[in-house]
Image 1 (spheres, rainbow, N blue to C red):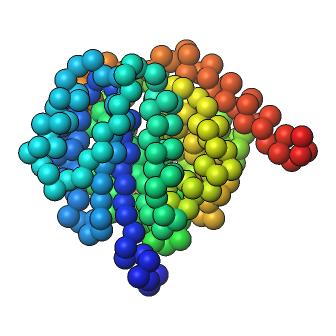
Image 2 (tube, one colour):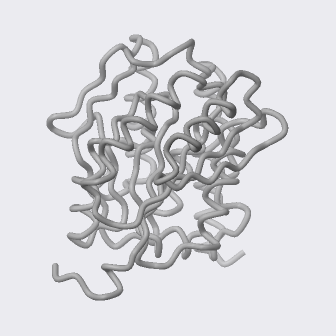
Amino acid sequence: MNRTDKDRSRQIYLMLPMYNEQEAIVALLDNIEQVRPSLKEPFSVVIVDDGSDDNSVPNIKKYMQKNPLLPITLLRHTQNMGLGQAMRTGIYHLAKKINHNDIVFTMDADNTHNPQYMPDMIKKVDKENDIVIASRYCEGGEEKGLSMHRSFLSLGASGLLKICFRCKGVRDYTCGFRAYRGRVIKEAYDAWGEKLICENGFTCMAELLIKTHHFAKKVDEVPMILRYDLKCGASKMKVLRTIMRYMHLITNLKRSALKTVSGK
């Protein structure tokens, strides 16, 4: 694919929802700095702090002072409101400023996602893919350090969502490490508005993927090794609650699709 002038001027954004990641966020930003020169395009980070009460925010501010060449925008919630609200704040903020040709990455802030996969994901976008997922479930992908019940939940949820929604090109429905073409984010936001992300918990990642997939011409994945063994602190996921939310998500999305088809 030949780059046009419009392509060369595109922006790459990385959006990180964060809650109490005082150690992990610094390690992740260091990893981002190592990868950034290979991106060779204007790049900036948007961090949404979801009411952290540890040293996450002070550590980010110190990092910004020491690394002024890495553009970081810090958006803050005064209290913890959940992953879904953090995603809403970040995605809606970007939807209003990005161009169709820009690329928006989303990634967990707990340092379990390695930014080293970003260049390969950009290459996939340049091959006409509108969404690219860093996937545990395509050839070459795997998980390290994830408990058996968490691994089973993620695999089972992806399998169930695949049966229910059949999003072409998607194996990993729940991993939040993705690259979206700006056009897809903008068109999905124009269509759904403030209802683009309704889920408040971890299920918001599957919701966003399913809703944006409708506007994507092609979707692909790159293999990723999920490094849960690098995570600092306990998981914030409540397994039983998350299972119930997946069932609620499936019911709501199926109902929304029926309303759209019927025009009601």
